[in-house]
Image 1 (cartoon, rainbow, N blue to C red):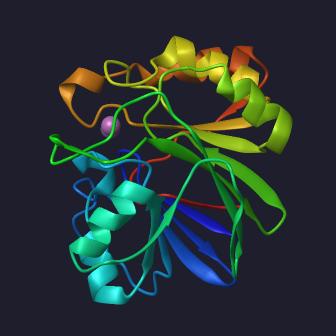
Image 2 (image 1 turned 120 degrees about the horizontal axis):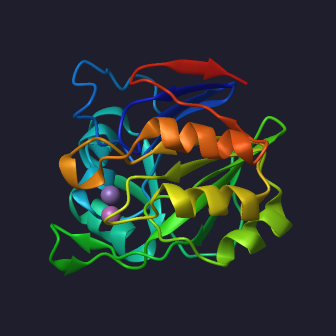
Length: 220
Ligand code: NI
Ligand code: MN
């Protein structure tokens, strides 16, 4: 599969049987063309995660997977959406996904109830990875490590609204991942983070920091 970083917490995952977007907030890559997208995962309703999901769903027919209340909101806006809850595997032609708890908030237009926030664990083509969404460090990450044994994780490191570097490094330890892709940093001033510090601390743990530039892809 091919993973492309689209900036902030947004990723495109190209698999043999489908093309996935996660949290498609695309201000960092305005020229990105969402073509052939089959599924969109949204971790919570905040604008920097819901992003262009509704518009892309309406244009391409891609199905949005999100927590029930947020999925209902997406449907009410004309998108195709599948409302789910935390804690059960959901099957797709390209693999399976489970929504995991996130410690954060989730509001539509920063005002209306968007249900609970979540992260997602993906199992695709023999690899398991965890996209944490926006969250504080939580003991749930030990459970995610024990239950799903992810190979790698996308973790927020920008602080202020989410984990900072110190807590993201602890999360990497608890998740027992071998590699971490940092996200949700340096998009705006409140979440500025020193990526060199993150890189050094993850290496000191014996894990691999995978710092992705916007529009950069990796094959795994
Ligand atoms: Ni948020
Ligand atoms: Mn956010």
